[in-house]
Length: 579
Image 1 (cartoon, rainbow, N blue to C red):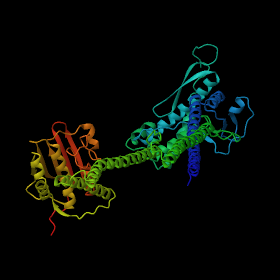
Image 2: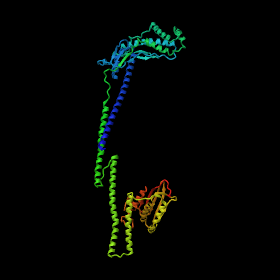
Image 3: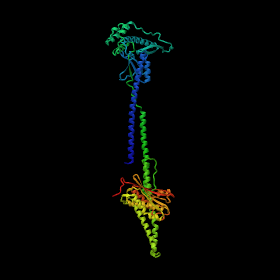
Image 4: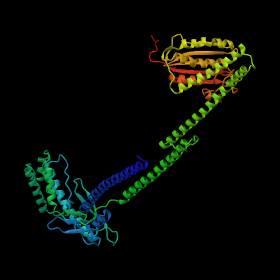
């Protein structure tokens, strides 16, 4: 799939994600707004009903309720319509009318009921006759109190309301609420006295309630006697509700009538969702999607174009071509990989040129010498004595060694070098190498020693190739060590690895030359003379042989102190000698 199609698919994905995010936001906002609206409506209902009930309880009538309704409508933002429930509905107040509007039709919902009558509270464990007396007294008190409060309200006097221990309101005159001053008022209003006939009627209602609950009322015929006779009788669960009903029924005509309250109007517009947040988010997500697509195309296409141009130049032979790389994303990693590949190709090309030059350099002088001596022998200028023939034979052997080493290195780097792996005793291999190079060390005046552990250390390896690799290290170490110095071979086991070290006390290698030690035809002596180095391929062959054995080889050196080559070879899980 082309990048354009992938970019288009990405943009479509972003658009779908933006649409889904917008839909989710809208649904979430609608749900939250609905919950907030319902909570606000409940709060408005509670406030309106509680304020109206408090007004009726305080003033003993609904006179003057219109201003309170107007204040509630202004504070809550609700349309409020208040009617009485007694007989035909009578509108006490309508916020639309109070605010100068055309009255609207009320909604279809059920009206709210506001009943300002208090509920009588009788103490637990009270004797029936005592409860009877409290009920009649509280009926008379409330009836006279509401009449007094209504009178105070009509006269424009502030009413102070409280509650006694039985939950019945108590009223007192406050200050004049009109503009005629702040002197105490209510002088024209008097509390009505309760007549004996009224008390008798209350008594009769209470006795009927007590007789209906099978309570002994004979003892209550006389007030004093009744108190004594019923002192030990508890006002049970049937008496208290009954007396509460008696209280409610007897104060009904004196208390403000219950109200029906309707909130809202039929043609009120439904609460609309706030469009600004949704539109803002949708626009922001769309802008982010478009900007992301543009940035993505810019971020990807520009490096791709650079990679295309660089690869075209690389294919045409411009091995120095590179691409600029910034960042740490996949495109940047692709650019780095391309640069590493180009560097590897350039280095390989340079190694190839250097190899050709090194081979030509290594073969040119000996072949020229051979040609000169052969032409001299053919022309009779030089006599073919044994010394000359030995020298010519030595030159031929040197060229043969270079060619053999080149062939081994080529096969090893191509992975075509044949290995015959077997369980090899590395300690025995080191001893064999020491014995093979002892004569060379003695001629150079160098002490050659080997230190191996008592327990055999076996590796799965080709003994001949591994001996060749160690032999190259030993030969180089002997040549690099001055007479009187020493070369030491050591073997140790380190976990699941065998560590072979070849250390010398030679002149050492400078730190800046250590990275080139394993390059082909590299010699520490820039003169490249035979006395200071062999073919220059031994270390390259050693590294390749060790690598083919899944091992590693490294070098540490200090000028004037010596050099140590370290070979690390993996050991088999069960290192036992082969049968």
